[in-house]
Image (cartoon, rainbow, N blue to C red; front, side, top):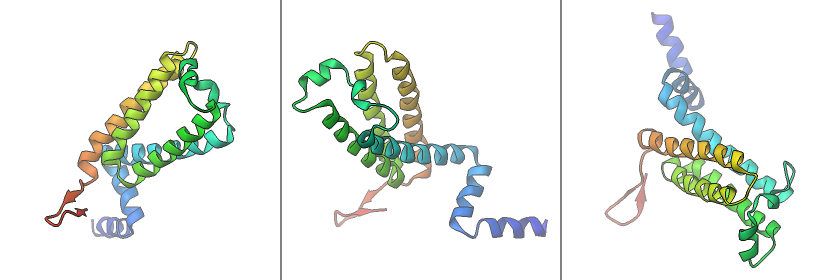
Length: 158
């Protein structure tokens, strides 16, 4: 018993070890941590690729009606999309309690684009699953990511 307690204290003495231990021992916290990491890393990665077109040629994913109303090229639109995705990923890493809902709205916009463009229904369905996961992250963040509160001076306290 004493060695188990000593081992647990050793594991939880470093913040990273404590987080990993908590993620392994508390399933809901593990889900929160996994979703937080996923919705931070993947949008950043996908956002960067909008500038490189390494995984695919991203402008092909824009519905023709959207391309028709843009005041610039589809590739320029993908640069804007990439920048937004990078910011969204960083925001999820910093404050998933709020940013997960922004990502959810972003995914809803992507789904609308894909549903209005024949041939991308499978991708829209996948993105709907991501939308549900982003909303789930928001719900879990209500428990595991403390809210920002306004102080009496008007500044935000953490």
